[in-house]
Image (cartoon, rainbow, N blue to C red; front, side):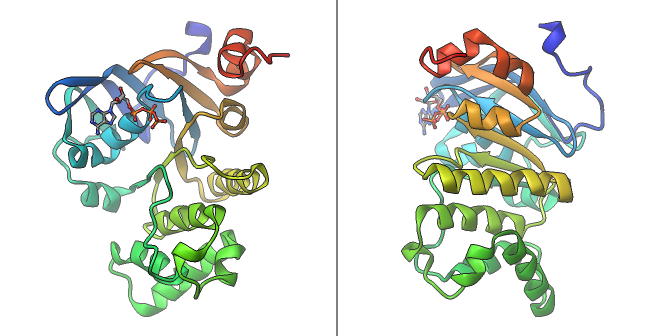
Length: 258
Ligand code: ATP
């Protein structure tokens, strides 16, 4: 698909995933030759149905696949030109990759504010720096400020998703791996979250690799997208080209194209 391909790999890529294969439990092949790139400051979408391999791809990049007893058995991942093999997730987070897992993992018994602070601990911030960074997050997510003292487990799904993203931002990432942020949320909240993601990208130049089943939404906010099927990249292209393609629309939108 040369007309849809990105320019040839440049060393300046924020992220380059090169032909990776991932195996769970030493036996289950989940990814078979996935390659993708995230240029600096861009939003790239990873599309695909349930079980296509989106979460596995993100976990392979952040290093969290090891927690699921999986490993990269072939290929490589480079972040800012450096191979990440053998680098533990906390070190990758210090280098600038943060992973917002599917399902809004927050500390339910901690307040919104303490959850956010936990994101800053990685950087060993002093109290004043922490306060300054918290205010930045509250400027992005005013809803979190209103509820700063509320236990995270008592807030809405949308607020928990905002919190999960806000906590990730406290690590001052260069690249956010965002897994299914729209899942189970009302469209109006999803819109709000995606608008903030777009602004973060625009104003702070943070890169996003966004796994989504909602392709309409993802293609509206991403510049480039990869379509995964059965652990392989089945298609890729600029978001506006993919959004216009009848086959993609009808496959993922159940024939509601046009
Ligand atoms: P979803 O939207 O449901 O998360 P996905 O596109 O993110 O789907 P993955 O969760 O990455 O897909 O799953 C890809 C493949 O890896 C599937 O075949 C799945 O069965 C397998 N897989 C995922 N997690 C595990 C695990 N912990 N142990 C074994 N196999 C797994």
